Amino acid sequence: MKKNCPRCSEKEYEVPEFTQEEKKILSELKANNKLGELMEKIEAMYDIRSIDAKFSLMHINKEYGKCNRCKVDYLDTEYMLCPKCNALNFNWKY
Image (cartoon, rainbow, N blue to C red; front, side):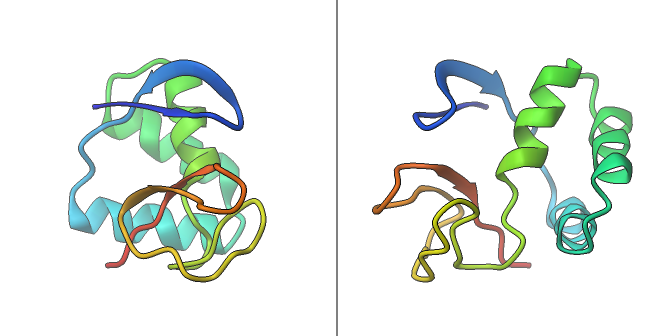
């Protein structure tokens, strides 16, 4: 699926259709600040460009319901633009 973040750019990036198990693994890596390992995992699981993998990495929430950018804490859908700052959040609940 294609996604874009108005805060980053108008360009669309390819975001893989992550499974629930993959979302859990990737969210845990992001929460633990293991960004290098997270990037490697995304690239290894899917045949996508590094820039697309980095886009996914940067938009995965560290904490469910909380915006990565402005820390608003009432996000309630999976791929959501923050109503306050307009940043895209991969708001995964696993």
